[in-house]
Image (cartoon, rainbow, N blue to C red; front, side, top):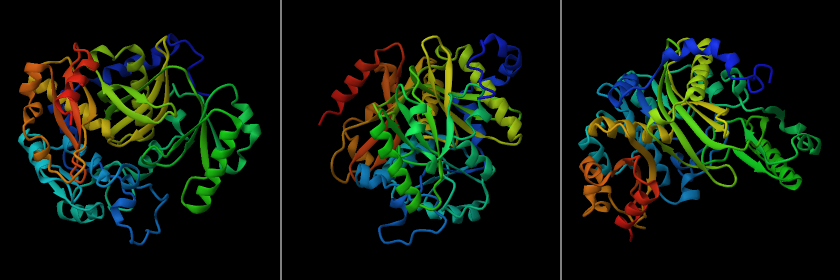
Length: 436
């Protein structure tokens, strides 16, 4: 890439980026959520589950989204939207699905986290906007008929795709953009010598956007699938991004981009991915222990570049990256939206503020499903002490709300624990507590 800094020693870019480090800050929970005021906030993805099995598919769908329900069982689409509650303030409105469990909402309210909210179908966002006259901040951008966004739609689209990564990061991992029609064996040979990631350039869902290939036959199969998809879904991007695998640890960062080009850092996370590079979850350690010079420079660089492109933009920026053993960072793809880990990261800040313990870590933790319809209150009957920060103070860990599937009786919680404790032992204690 013409503006990549990977072949230049880090010292050569410090002079440009160091002045921007003063624009970085580490906000507390109370300080951070002030940035989400006067919005309607939704963490709901619009997909096949939102419209029903017999509904007419809207003409403006860019790509038919896969069904959460089909892949993860009944009620699965109700889980992630609950994480939006962590962004609640007294003068914004949190959108939750119509079928959200009432006792799950009550627990969020009892913590003093959830204030104003509305339980409506995804398509109800436009009516919600007319009622409250607030812009929509969401993880999705279409099929909701919302007329006023908190960020420019063009910026949302551009930052949530991958083709302009090198515009927004000087530390972009090397990549090339190819028309799907041009993918052939010669292209694969250009990237031979290891694994290759094929990235669709759409805002996708349920890990459908990345294909990992390790040999020519897998590449040919992936190309055939892509050609089939673009024939079926007319709005799908006709190009893909090819990126060679990089040895290192999968990580991500999130920050709030301010209109002054400042960056309020929310999290620097260790990511857990499977053998195909598909995201499984994130661990959020205390920031002071993971925010080094390379991390600060990379975030400052992205914040500066986003500000140069969109001076008035205010919103959550997330970015996945690979970090090598020498500390060097290779950014993979940015996103302008709240993610599931946004809620988990804010839960960490909440626990740190309420307990006075700055050494809090957080991670999502799925608990065993009851396998039947069950309210949140019923699930935790007899084990509700784990939901209190008093439990954190006595046992070193607690479970904060994140998402709940009442159809299966399945909670996905934000587990917070003192980072001095062994994570594996904490997880074993949680598993023992909720063993069925």
